[in-house]
Each structure stands twice: as C-alpha cells, then as structure tokens.
Image (cartoon, rainbow, N blue to C red; front, side, top):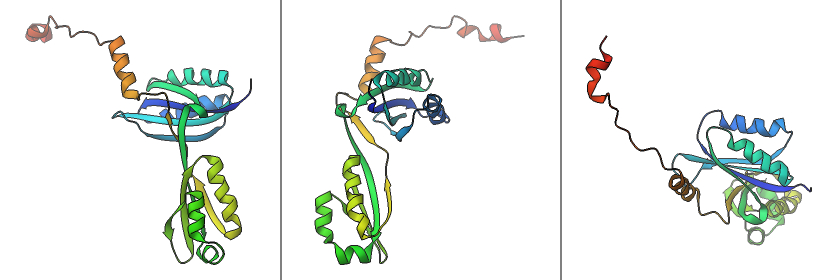
Length: 196
C-alpha cells in the first residue's frame, strides 16, 4: 500500500500529559509527525488535536484506534486531504531596503495573497495563509530579496462531512443515556448508619 498524507483529528478532554502520551504512540511506531496543532473546539471544555502524518491507511487506522484507547480521548478521526478544508499560516521577514528597491510590493502582495503585518526600518514581515505548496512559492520569490526568516504554523483543518462534534455528543447521549437517579435507601438514616 502507498503512503499518503492523512490528517488525524482528535477530540479530548484537556488534561496535562495527554500530548506526551499521544506523541509516544507515534514515536513507538517510528512515525514522523509533520504537523501538530492543538486548540479549543466548538464544544466548551473539549480540545481538538490536528495531526498530519504520511502513512498507509492501514497504519493510520491502527493509530487512531490506539489513540482512542487513551482515557481522555473522546473520539478520533482520520481523513485524506480531499476530505478536509485546511490552511496553514506563514510569516516571512525580509529586508525593508531590499524589498523597497527591487520589488513592487503591492504587486507581490496581491499575487500571493500576502499582507504586511509589520514594517520597520530594517525589516518587513509578510503574512499569508494557504496550502504548503502556496506558502513555499513565496519563499522562492522572496529568497533573492533578502529573506531573513520564515516560519509556518501547524495545519488547521475542518472535516467537510462533519456536522460538528457537539452533534456527535448528542448522538452518543441518545444511544447511551446515563443511568437513572436511584434514591439511596439509607439517605434518611444517617444517624443510625454513621454512628459508632
């Protein structure tokens, strides 16, 4: 089977040490994580991990099952790039003198959907969002003009077919309702039960 890029989405309770335990699942199998993002989700108190790896579907399926065994993990999904809408943010720091002299800044910004977020005497910082191929193109364009620094964020992704995790929680509660409240028969006999 051929390896391809998969995005794993994990909904979790926000607990200390969970990130480490999830990372161990990947490192034990010698799988390189290309991108990792964690953020709040649409459900209050629930966090969302977005993990990008390149693997076979069989391996990814096993990984997701392993991740779901973690106590704090509520649900994990895996998707191909065609099943999600995703973006990455990139920042580029360039020499202000170089960029002002040799490039028509407005044209460059329009062409690559970038915008200046900081303009200083010694450097200018541009920001753009898009897929990795798109943000990489701007690196190549800026390199001859004194690219000082470049950084790209982790992927953020939304599953196209998803109706949101809060809907999944409602479905789960409808299938497995909580146990009925049972009146404790000893509740009114505290003195007798707890006396020594």
